Image (cartoon, rainbow, N blue to C red; front, side):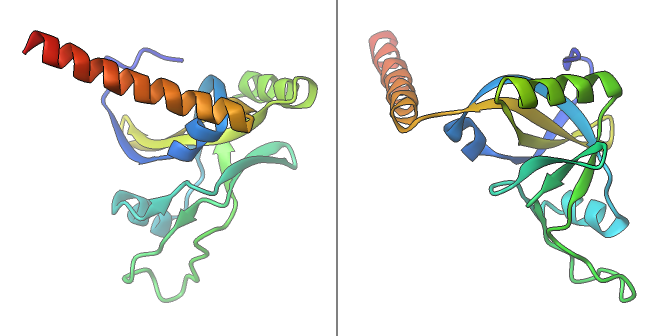
Length: 158
């Protein structure tokens, strides 16, 4: 992944459910093929990643299930489809890596975050392994303990 300190990243939408349901092993930034009305809707914050996933079809990866709600001022001659499949823009080495991991190692690819990068709309996708129920409980326990530890440290200092 590139050094993000030099460029400003502004998040549009996060997929918190992905971090709850999966162990994220690796993250890759991908571009998205969007229509004009979609760009306007995304800039207005009308996007949801909750139930979306990444699917391999016809030599490309597609974002499926991402809901982009059209603005009421969308063009009259364009019929907006809020959940259409959107092509991800990746270079060939990234595509090969993702295909190899998903086919051989049993990984799945999930969208993590949609953000602006140098004025363009990008998406972080993650190579993920599914969590079992006990793993989810363990993650919650760890998060609770982190919060409790922060609280205790604050009370000791203050």
